[in-house]
Image (cartoon, rainbow over all chains, first blue to last red):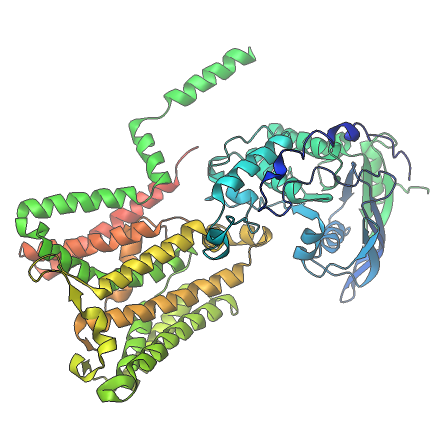
Length: 294
Length: 341
């Protein structure tokens, strides 16, 4: 557990700039007002202790510990079958661990469904671009969290506040510093792969109060678009969010991560940093060719 | 270097749109424009051929004739938007109609109660389709192909295959066939009004509520919708159930329209409702289309029938023309879907 100080840069300056003008509309339920995650960098925002998950006789997770601090990018790497996705699924509630404890902001949490983790402030960006091509950007950002108009139009007729959502979506994307998407009324199918991923990431960032989990966010993208996504990850990190990045792309991991959690054979092989170990070392630990003394 | 490149690229982006591409773009945003265009053309053509086509009385009559198929096409639109299809439209309608009529026949049961039971039966039938599609995860085509036979058989068994004339039915069941407006002029029935109200209500739900957005999302990419937090199974179940209710109301309209409850009343309802939806610009692949397009589509099918029959064209040629129109409509849809950013 070394070098917490690698990149805890300038999040204190960021947190005060926004979140002032957005609160005028009484109707929206705190959405997009998530600019101030826990500023305390000494306590993990998300931590797991002794997670075990078995599938029949197959051990998927063999007592894994994980700590994620606010304002850091924690990469999770590992060979196929090392338990990366099982770990992530336990963290997001897609799977329920057999034993072990998870804490979010110090509070013990038990996620039974993905919606539970989402409600608690953990957002996930999936590999397979979970956006709806036919809907516009604002609709995608607000999908399954639509806001209704105030008054009887909203409560009785259940009418959507389209204009308000579009405005708030535009503001949120601007606040996130994401420049690749501009026009909130544009249909997502007219966007490039990188822009679509930007929509998915903005959605996660805007709603994810505390933690954003990105599962192979650059796998489907070209070089330039992949770099745009990495830039977005840095921006989110600098805003104080805790970010877990699952990736097979070692250059990307070494480029953006603050710490690297290496899974091997269902267990935790070790946590390194890009400055303490080279990429070759990381791969060696991942494959078992090298052991990490702790 | 980069600056000149980007302006050159911007220049290229501005230049590249041919008129055809621009049309493609507009149609992509407003898929109901091309059917509207066809409807206007048909209207002008038929009026020039026979001025009687545009007379107020024949317009009113045409709306009355369109009402039932237009109503069924609402439910069909909802289901096709979710990338499904409903082959049991006609069967549910006939079953609901025969049950309503048989129960209330010759003062057997209070008309209101009979109507309510008929409507509930249609809702239950739609719900059954929905359960089979969501819980058993069967393709909608197969589910509704099966329930088409099941509901048709039940309707025939229940009614004994015989029809019930209007004078054996209570006033309430016939009421949607009653009209208003001058005789020989523009005359509408309450059935037309009921169908219009259904279009407004469902159109509002589709375009203005979260449920409507979710219908589009589920049809466009079900897995992405699920990952985004949309309760996809529940959306599908409500779509099939609401469709059932619409078919039930259509059954009521149909009794008024045909002045009887006949087991083989709307044999071609399945295909006509799908035709109206497809001509109206809704994509069979789901997630794309507008309800107003369906209304236009139903009007096109009917005006083609009506106009060609006014012109003395044989029935078979009218069917043929409808078929050609369907193929053109689907080709246009495929072309629109290839739109570039």
